[in-house]
Image 1 (tube, one colour):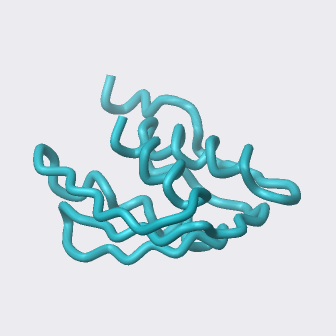
Image 2 (cartoon, rainbow, N blue to C red):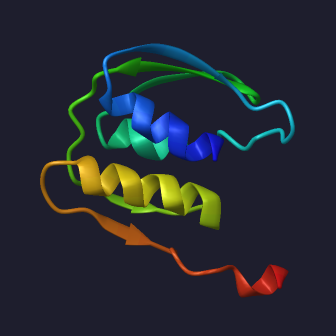
Image 3 (cartoon, rainbow, N blue to C red):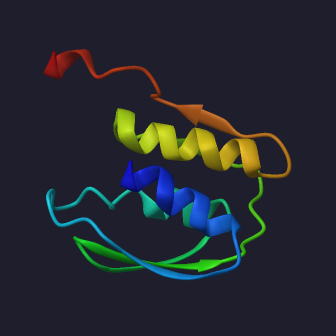
Length: 95
């Protein structure tokens, strides 16, 4: 759920500090959102500073995992232009 909040906050007005305390590196997908125009600073493996509103634009990005893929899909829906998301399916090697 926190991943979706990061994406939503990228397009709304204000600043939020997102803290993911359970899983280290859960926020390492934010570089994908930054490439789409989001203003996000990864403070450390657990915290990201999201500054909105950002004008997102379409981009071609890879999804590192299913949770990050959800955030990228949300960003693509809010973005202007066409987006292509690669590697969006489940990682069968971990199943």
